[in-house]
Amino acid sequence: MPLQFADRLDNVETSAIRELFKLLGKPGIISFAGGFPDSAMFDVDGIREAVNTALTEEAGGALQYGATEGYNPLREQLARFMTDKGASDVAPENLIVTTGSQQALDLLGKALISPGDKVFVEGPTFLATIQCFRLYGAELVSAPIDGEGVKVDELEALIAEHRPKFIYLIPTFGNPSGATLNLERRKKVLELAVKYQTLVIEDDPYGDLYFGAAPPPSLLNLSASVPGSRELLVHCGSLSKVLSPGLRVGWMIAPAELLAKATMCKQFSDAHTSTFAQATAAQYLKAGRMPATLAKVRAVYAERAQAMGQALRRELGDAIEFTQPQGGLFIWARLTGAGGKVGDGNVLAKRAIEKGVAFVPGAPFFCANPDHATLRLSFATADVAKIEEGVARLAQAL
Ligand SMILES: Cc1ncc(COP(=O)(O)O)c(C=O)c1O
Image (cartoon, rainbow, N blue to C red; front, side, top):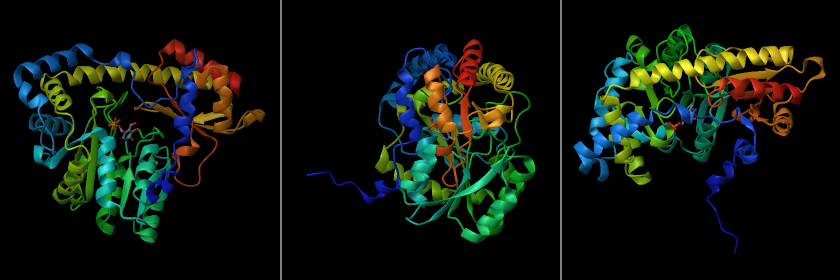
């Protein structure tokens, strides 16, 4: 008898990107496809020291079951980390630790979405968010963006029309767009949250990865200056892109009532995030290693972003257009089709693999009205020489 699956699975399908990843095993492929940090960047010595300290000083706590809200020493360190970055009123009890920020998104979906609820995401947005919210039955509405993030006038018109359950944004160095919401628009988003009493989720795994000047303050930091907005704001953070995704340590700051519901959902999900990983992360932060680690990854990614931007302009010329990112891991580009060159990201992705370079086409990152000319290129995992070689191969595929 064929297995009968839940109806909710009808709303989602395996991502086109995962299918593409299967081709990446080909020997010699230079990959700009992944959304992950460079493994060579991991502070292995620092993490080893943190593990040793955790096992020496707190083996019981690090190896035992723990509280669903998170391991208290880590909640304290994360509250301090956020406060040092300019957030006000973040005490340990205002946040819960999640198994990566991906779990925060899942818990939010579980706690907030009833089938048929309208939820806004940026067009384009993080693919796993689209899949996760759809799994809970959300009807996604795509809010258009430009190089400075979500277009707030259009956002307001959409809110007035659809009255969404919540709005999900990646305001800083978005995935895949690389775009950063400007300061004026950030204030406006918070004002809209208050005006329409709409919850806003700020997903911020990339905000610390800036190359030059720091980006505008997070929505969380700004919420102190927009009365009433903090009660309508969720902030998701993660150690994945700055320290190690394998630790699976993320966190969520949210109004108390929502935090309680998310915690309840987490009980049924994984009981708690690995105490071993949490104790390690807590010791790492406590040892004060984060500023040096951040300085290092920012410098390396800045150099690679620069190299990729220059190579794309040099090798692909007017066949491609993009805004040079000021942080994060990605260049989001559009094929112009100039001179009869390939104008479709999917077509180019297949031809590129044959030439020995991989990236992901942009269309799957849209929940509606996909722009088929777009593509996402990660500059994080290849060194400068590989980036130059990979872009040269890309030019041959055009
Ligand atoms: C925008 C965004 N949110 C959340 C995540 C999930 O990250 P993690 O679960 O490793 O914290 C990612 C990872 O790629 C991401 O790009």
